[in-house]
Image (cartoon, rainbow, N blue to C red; front, side):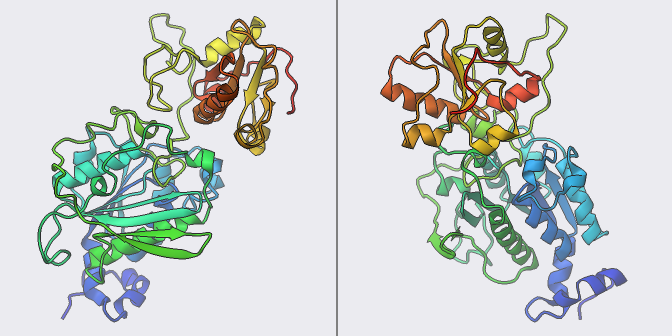
Length: 445
């Protein structure tokens, strides 16, 4: 007979539907209470994962996220609220989790996952759940799990689509009776895409309820795995198309020719907006690589010996932290934009974001010509005919990815177009406290 003395009176009341559930019962509930789970990300996917792990009675959760709550998060990151704006996501999420299950132990790690700390974070866990938002973190977490032999539940979302699977390099006999190595994230994605190849959710968008669907599936798989019930998604990738209301399943086997991982994140520096020294986050979620939205405000230093943020004054050849690629000769920083605007050395400034983004804030005097209009409608660029290398047109978006795409489209039509790309886009303008104005552009396109 199962010893229920480990359950408090309130837990007996709280988990009574589990305790009476055939095929689950007290044994499974006690396994949950004894379990320790590492959850990477308290964003869109993390919200349902953390909520349901706490509500189900998982005993200990290590929560990793270095971001803070922003209003743009709230349409999908439903563990947070307006009351928590500006608060660390770990603290905001932990408060909700403790409200659902006061006995839960939550360890907050307000830091990004890096190759240096990944193994230390992963090793104490019985299960790792990756709800991060960029390729670099996914590979780093997967590598740490493969090296330590930890099971990993991974999910991802973009636009109207999502997927979830269980990866485990050394599965036990209960999950893989035939023995041998199990599939990992690197078996599903042997090579990461080039930086900027996959759009971020800030650029492509995501249906707000989608992370709720995928995150709840991830939580379900976690609870099943920890409780020892049902069949896991090991060796299967479950995909969901919200527009078609359709689930599909893809078989996944380990690549017998792939060499086992021995180092963590050695080949992913700069992917998904991160660097080898600082990866991770839980800003906008993505099916592959969503760049982190939040960053600390940047102030000009009064100490001349202290180097300025390279995103404000980019140096050709150095790495652009927003794309992971080297700065180009036509990249300009916020400070250069300020100086050129003040000196009248700009013909126009063009904002290629969506109209609603432009309405929320924009560079003073900038003209809004959305990327889609440039790509599909052949929309003209204000001031381009009058521009010169001495007075170019500056193009910007939120982070600097869409603006680079817009420049490539424009140059395919006008190869010698004198264009400049604003590094870090409007995100960096706000962080730097800048509001440069162009020289007499129209305000509408």
